[in-house]
Length: 471
Image 1 (spheres, one colour):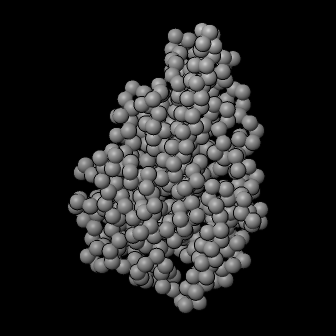
Image 2: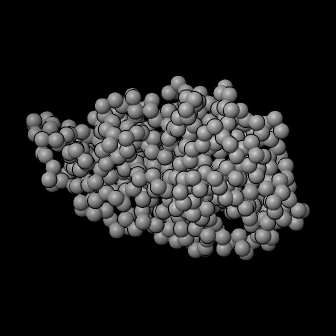
Image 3: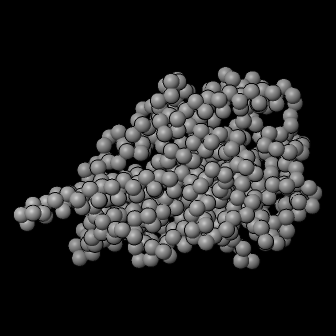
């Protein structure tokens, strides 16, 4: 039983203090009374900084911004932060059949047949993606057929060489943190279209991995949190949302109750399922959330006294079908002396290494780094990894996935409000689904919905008051 003396009254409650929730609150706070309730002891959600012993920091969650992400660049500027380009100079490497091959650009040089096969399947995929309207992928004339198959089944049919399929799968893992068999073809096409193209999502310079933020993307969330001040409550998991007889909502959390007119749910879909709604959410909403599992990702960073691989003319970028680290980047911060190598464990590999001890995982990752960059990479000054599937209030990264049948079986109502409950988060975006840009877009839409509803309610109340006063 909750102490009724702890009941507060505000106009809007935002559940979740990731970048979407914070931005929604920021957009509304100047006009309405707002509370932001966050289960963790920090803000940022899937954005988080790690601090090394020498004082340097690194993003262990989402980190990149790139061309076309206009909301992110505006936010960075508005908050007084700056960016720098990811190191993209020198040769990339492909680790194939135990050998390292240097190359430039996004696609490695392999045997001509596999290269041609990969080029054709990429071109076919991009053409299909361009035929979609990202605001309504279910309306595409091929939507039912594409949503009935996995990306893997499509690849098996249209990609003729095993090497081309392996290389394509590396890109899919890097973009989705999942295996091709887990994803609806329609969702893969929508996801690429929502971020312009698959090539954009895979590229560094000119693409989605172009820039980093000084102070980390989580630092942007820290600034927004300071702006919100006492409106933000940490260590406050929400466990229930109830519709009251007077038409208001009552949000139940660890230390009390908050009554409000509107709620913005700004948590990953799998976390919304933890909350008890009274009355229950419509069956279609609950089933849709159940069909949106998160990807599987462990982000791994090793810190060295300097980026020694640059001396050998290497960019720090590696692609490897063998793995277990299948992609790496030079994550060193501009203006800092330390060299940072970053790699991902994704999909099946992430699920495997989530079950082993941290030392075994560290050894496997550093073995890969040594294989790609020499024995010097085996002995970093510090090492950190972040298993997002084991994060209590996240349970997966980068974003939710749509399995076959999800978009055409209910996805058309994904962004729809449920009465006074509105939905934000990168999974509810039209543009840049799965990215911070998408989170900001969804927050703008949810905040606009709430603003419109509250203004309409205020006008209705004014008319009623005028009538009651004989006006």
